[in-house]
Image: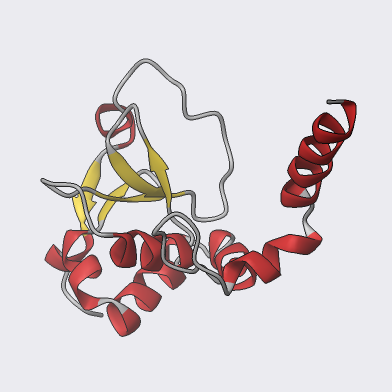
Length: 134
C-alpha cells in the first residue's frame, strides 16, 4: 500500500514539472488537442496591437470576434467550442475565464481579474474588426 501511494505521488510530481510541459505539448491526453506551450508563453506577453495583428494574420475568424476591453482582448462564443479551437486559442496566449465565460488575453498586463464589476464599463470596449485599418 505504501509503495502504491509513493508511485501516485511520484507521477503527480512528474506531471507538474515544467520540464515535462514541452513533452506533454506533443501528446494527446483525455481527448484534448496538443498545445505548444513555448509558443503560448511567448504569445502571452504580446501587447494589444501585436496580438490583434497576429489574430488578423493567423486566425481571421477569431479576429472578427475579438473584443478589446481596456488593454485586454476577449473572445466569446455562444456555444462550447471543440478541443481544436480551444487549443488554437490557448497557443495564441488566451486563457479561459469561467466567471465571465470568455477567452481572455492579458496582452502582457497580468493583474488580478477577480474584480466584481464588468471591466467593459470601467475601461470601455470595441470590436477590433470594426476599426478601420490604418
